[in-house]
Length: 565
Image 1: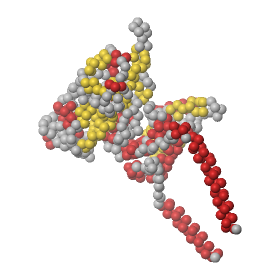
Image 2 (image 1 turned 45 degrees about the vertical axis):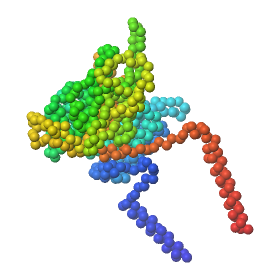
Image 3 (image 1 turned 135 degrees about the horizontal axis):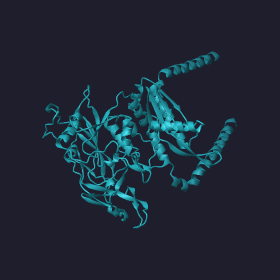
Image 4 (image 1 turned 180 degrees about the vertical axis):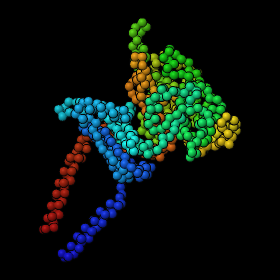
């Protein structure tokens, strides 16, 4: 008997040792959550496995933090541990409290360095042990370092339309995409080139300073004319310009210029069209209370129609809109400004039907027109990205835009349109708009002409102000404000994040965007039911367990008596 017991014990120990040895060579991870929140996407795993040197993540989210930020901290730690499971020892991380320096000057120096590197600060109210509250500045972000290069990642999403809990949930959902995009930028030896079209009164780099600065962290930016330079290729036969941005042109395009843009698309180029279809603007109203909104004739209608969209000759008015300051003082009195809704500035809620717009904050646009998708070309897929609200209407051009509309009552029954498109994604194989009328352009040979494109994509937005930032007057100086920041309401809209996602998608980083499709469901308790059924659930959780234990005791004693009677 003793010999058999010894053999069984030895076999069990041997099995455990064998399992331990095998687990050091092979590992398996099981995610049993319904929304797969602990599973990385396939492109992320492949990217982590090809890392050949150490990547350091310095996470500035440590110290005495509220419960919500501790949850975000734990999620970051879990995500980096998941990265390490596939990237091995090449993935290293550390958590840092930027406010741990007891010296105030030292803390301010650290804060300044983090801000200069690109991390955005957030001010928190911390409850002290004595019950008082104190202000604490934190930098909820990560500095990712690889081969002597750094990339800043701001992980806290602060959507103006969402609650604090929803913002934390969105931040956790976006972790994989934010981190993998930063790693991808560090692993890419040469930054892709983005061209900004010029020659037609487009926005200047100074008018897009914040977006130019943001894109400059990941791409090489150049201004380019609509000439044969657009279709130049590198030594590998790839287009020099990975994507082209047409930002609010004001002058007409010639047929030769349209031809070069068309051939750029036929060669596989990607275009972000930011087109105003009207002459009206917020700046034009600064010189008077009234302006005549005329149709902007850019000579692009036939080109866009051929690709599958039409920007209509109208202006959208939306009940879900921004506010502007209006002088409410009587004549002869000092000016007194008050915010008033401005229906020509819709606040757009991005759709959730595409990774490009998923989990984005609301977007502000000005004097936009509706977009229709046209044509039945099965080789071109059309996806609506941005729409007006369910309470909107259109005003045909030409139209009178008068500030007196602010004093009029907004009648909901007159806003009868719903979900008018202002942003469309086109993907597929396009036919040339010059297939039946090829032009002869200097520097472009007939042998280079393409009638059909390879698989490519473009995005059409019926507003150029979406990329234009506001300015603040400070004495004699005009200070640029962050893109999407409204100086009247002090809210920051999602313009910059949307445009960055659009450029990333056009440049072919859509595999990384697979992680943006994740949706972690926020399973909140129903407060109405909690109030209504409070007593029932209290009885269920307190009394029922006691009754179960008592019943178990009676049954146990009854069985014991029967057994030993």
